[in-house]
Length: 174
Image (cartoon, rainbow, N blue to C red; front, side, top):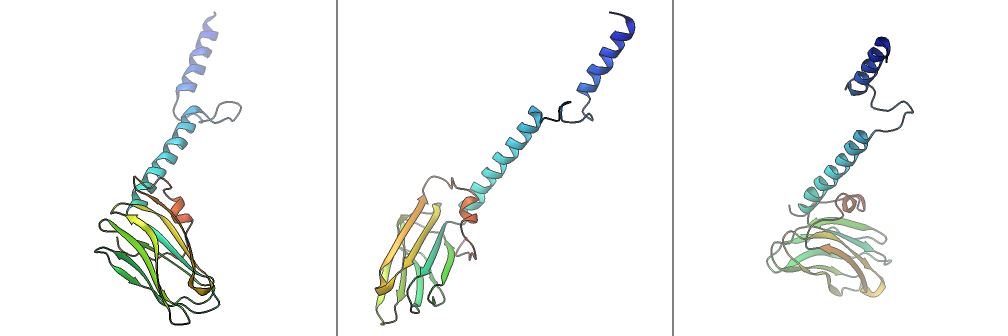
């Protein structure tokens, strides 16, 4: 190899190692370093979301699918927990809040229908401090309810997705 070619090889080699050099290769493709940086950022955001979501407890959504107002609507954490007095629910209206169980307990919703009958429905059958997830209560004609819940006792695996699935949030107890 001639002296000029050696010098060219050294110059080319140093440009590839130069950190100020573009992060993409000659064809414009993303480098392994960029992929690792993006992956690390996504994992960090997910883990951060798990910790933040864990502090909010269980998200409760109540939906009134009757044609009447529901009065004295409450969410109660039974067994040494608080009671959340909510506004009356008008037909078609929904209400969201987060509750945090303090000890072994269950979460109930209480309301009075238009005929004056009081209802007490279980939303989450068993919960402890640190549990998180979501529960939805749909109140239908005649006071019947449809409950769906996903409560995770180990950790908040859904992370930020639990927040994105709910809107108009109110925080019960942190």
